[in-house]
Amino acid sequence: MTRRSSTPLALAFLVAGACSSDIDEPEYVERPVGEIYNEAMDSLGEGLYGEAAVKFDDVERQHPYSSWATKAQLMAAYSYYQVNAYDEAVIALDRFIELHPSNRDTPYAYYLKGLCYYEQISGIARDQRMTRQALAAFGELVNRYPNSRYALDAKIKLDLTSDHLAGKDMEIGRYYLRQGHNLAAINRFKAVVENYQTTTHVPEALHRLTEAYLSLGIVEEAQKTAAVLGHNFPGSEWYVDSYQLIEGKQIRPADEDPWYKVW
Image (cartoon, rainbow, N blue to C red; front, side):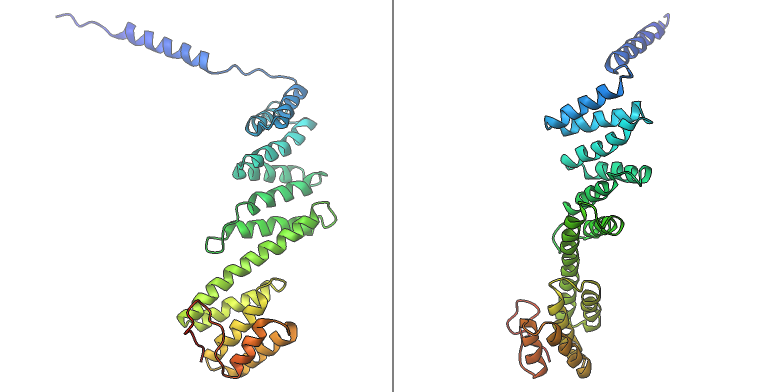
């Protein structure tokens, strides 16, 4: 029996595949930079942010050394931010900052980078990596460009992120306190007092330090901490609790258990 060669059929499939590939793949055509940029701005104005980001990227890809490319880098980052593509936005912003450190729009790049992290902040029970990154980005903006138009809002968000991180340390400190791990609790509460002095958590942190010191029998240190609390926050409910604690009375619990007592 004669064996029939399959080569012609195989070649036919290869040719067909090649033709199909040629048809599906758009031909690269270099276009004037202003034309691409204006199309990207039109897409942006229509709220087609994903489409706009691709077109702004095309500006830099086709005309990398033009002045339009510099603008397009930042506009691409903004477009990615608008569709919550935060990773892509941060990559574009980092590149803009690295290539154009003295550009007049660099403060805005830092601000937008901070927003990308800030809008991903989760509750204090979750990992706080985004909170720390937002803190770093806004902090760099304020330190480098204290007089920029974005610095004021960045300072407000710095306070909010600091308060959030302090809240995380307080949550962990309270847990340690409830478990009787007083030294670990003290380290957390000290971190709040030392690192987040302007936050709303400091009065409770000082009170919980007083509580932990007394639990360890370090009465003198507890009295000093309570005195600091009374001096800096004389009207605080936490000072009232610390005073009662020093006097040997029951105070508010670190958890929801009404029978929780400190001795």
